[in-house]
Length: 85
Image (cartoon, rainbow, N blue to C red; front, side, top):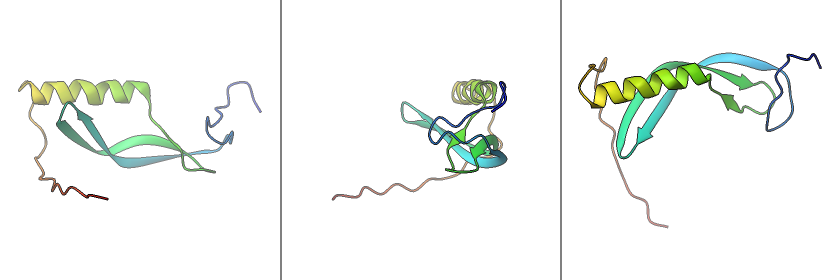
């Protein structure tokens, strides 16, 4: 393994794929859906890794939207259904 090569914390693999996913951020009963969030996915086990700077930007936008300083691109409804086991 090369000195700067990343290693998966879960399975130890070193191969990753860049992908874009839908990321759902929630905090204290408030939500933000982030489409096309860039991530790296372990090619062996599927563990998802997020860039710290991207997560900081998601959090910044979450607070800006919920404090009324920015407008979301759109608003979606999310159905809720409790399941008792």
